[in-house]
Length: 292
Image 1 (cartoon, rainbow, N blue to C red):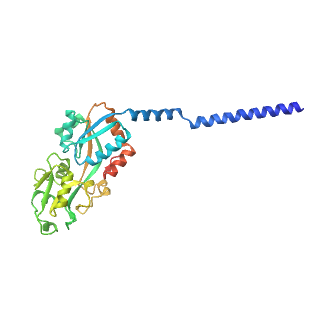
Image 2: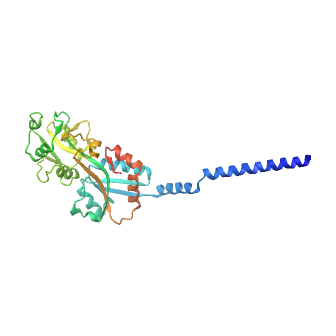
Image 3: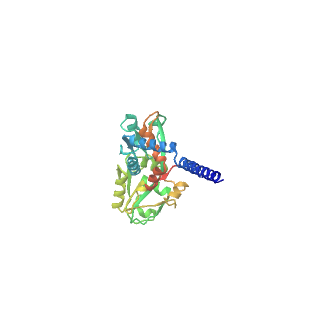
């Protein structure tokens, strides 16, 4: 009888040992996913192996966001450098066509003479165009009609639009500028605008407006700082909400282009990064409205 009890007890202990071993094996199987581990390794390897120079050319209004995206992109892909150049949106298609840039930046839609059918076009953000005046200017609002009259020379003194008795200095961008193209088309002053000076970058407009009490110009909304003031247009504030709902009329797309049929890992990775949550955060931090 003792031998029978002993045998039964030994068998129970042995079964318990096997059962524990089986449970342990099952837990390890749940926590360890070979496909996920492999995928992570492949992603890491892909990021490490991507290398080269990604060249961008075109809009100066996009310089800030492109620089920020480039820095974040290079941090993700340490063997990649991003170079941004250009003096305006008019450079974008020319540079991509000539092969001096992989990607072109335009702060406007492409024109028919730029052969848009030859390129893949990706809108990366929406930007507001600020009507900028000196921070000490008492004028806080201008109607679309007043803006058009100021930039065409029909109104030349601030007193005629509710400001001080002071001559208006009208500042604009160079002919190739996407900001100029966007502004002039929105306010219907193409080929009619009369500028005291045509400046080659957004930064120059900000500097000139901040130093001249009578100046007015147009800049990318994200370029507005404490040295200048963005007036309301038709009593609508230039805010993200008003740009999204399109009540603020002075807005334009930020687009990037590359040659159709281009098989480039750099370009593919760039646009995948822009679409990612990380890339979208960079765009928002740059003061732009992302395109979902």
